[in-house]
Length: 293
Image (cartoon, rainbow, N blue to C red; front, side, top):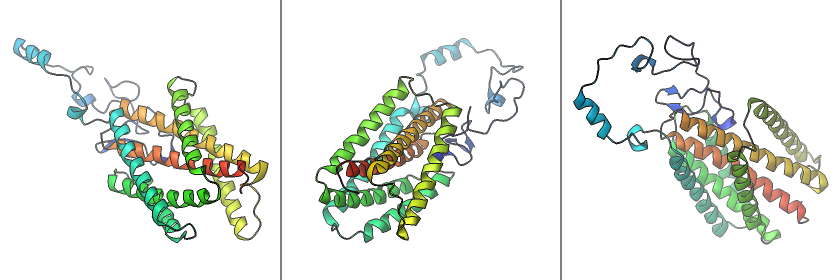
């Protein structure tokens, strides 16, 4: 058992099971017959120490033998297929509203896009800290974030033709490489790995906030241009890949712990956040490499 490591899933725990967390940071002292980390089902476990159960009859044994094994539809637990399906829905919503902004919003009109980004940020915070899962809010976030990404991508495209598809391909490559590295065991999400990554991420975000405030007063530090901008862009993409590995680990843990099916939406939200981060950093990096600040 372990506490959630991804900031998206790190409120008091991570995926939930009914009204309790699925073992994420909610361990209790072990009771007789429970094991080292506690077993929330020990009270009804026929194999718990000291439990006395009547023997099964021949008819009951035959019925149990002939019954199909419990699957996701019967248990209501999250599966990898659920995560893939919900993530696909979320990303399709993001792309669809990105296309709306691309084809309807003028290049020189960022007002609606900035408004959409601000509302998406608020919704994202609500989703991140809300105990229960709300698919409507997650899809609303995807729609608004997609609208913003469509507008900013169109603006970059007007200056540097082809940059949008390059950023999409780069994001896809990072996603695929990170997934392969994680599944092959080349990347192991350990507590030390998580602590170091989150420390770097907090420092990165703080530095970007300081740079943004300074730029409002004409004292921009050059973190988004030149050689320093390239280094910052690479660090930003690496952090996005780091967040993806936390997403993968949390999804696997949620499935192992028997998280309910609705938690697949939370997993989709976490993956979408990470991919949006990578796409924006990729867009900025390519712009610098192609000679535009």
